[in-house]
Length: 103
Image 1 (cartoon, rainbow, N blue to C red):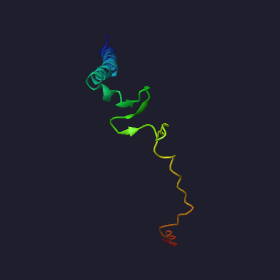
Image 2 (cartoon, rainbow, N blue to C red):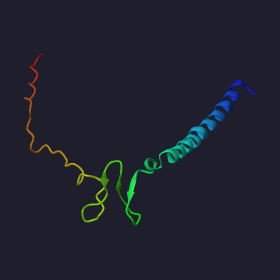
Image 3 (cartoon, rainbow, N blue to C red):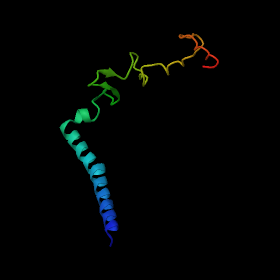
Image 4 (cartoon, one colour):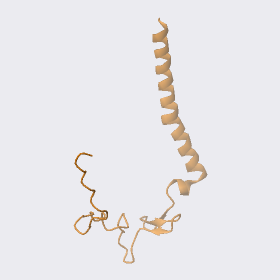
């Protein structure tokens, strides 16, 4: 076997090893540690009503319901910002001078 093909084989085995190690094993270990050490925070610190529905978060002090018990909208803004138009804008700088002939 040539040196190049041996290096390619080693590189592919290293790629497979690190893909499994860093893509599967490490996230699984961190998830288990988080669930064991801090289960409330790892699950989002959600507050549940007696019937099991999510009513808020204990970390941010945020309620997901309004005063009448209806769910709040996902965003605080009513929609996208209005488009900027140039209708009401006037030119702020004077127009550039025309070049002098022969200059």
